[in-house]
Amino acid sequence: MTTQQPDRVRQYLRRRGSAPSDVKGGLKGLLDHWESLVAAVEEGYDLTFDDYLNDMELRDTLAGALEVASADDRAAAEKKLGKLDDEFREMTVECGPIWGEKSARENGHDPTEQWWFFRRPKSPAPDFEEELREAGLIT
Image 1 (spheres, rainbow, N blue to C red):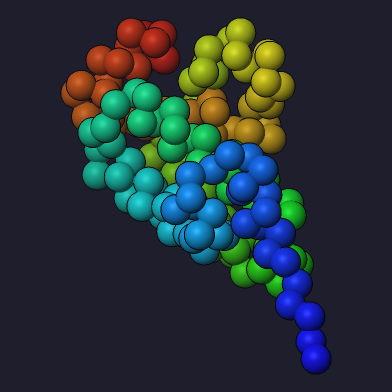
Image 2: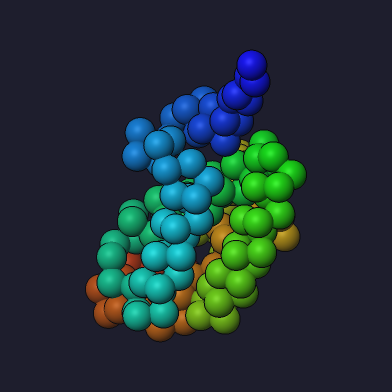
């Protein structure tokens, strides 16, 4: 009789307080969601600034999920993630911390390790662009 290993990614997502749909989707679901987000940025991200903050939290959750994933799952995911991250970087520019300086300090956001918290789309939709301007991320 074989004992099935617990899914460490789903356990991590539960501990992090992720939405049930994210827990159910696991690592593949997180990657699929990030892929959709990259496509949305390519199309001219037209959601709100709050949506963007949540989407960057998704990328942070994905980073944490990779840390607890099995070696095989991590290797497979990192191949796809590397391509998606490269695409995202091409369509975005560096900016100040999207959550603000105070939050970045309090949460230890590092522009090298958690670069997604320090980027914004090059070509946001007009309403989103205005929100970025109000947040001081576009001058």
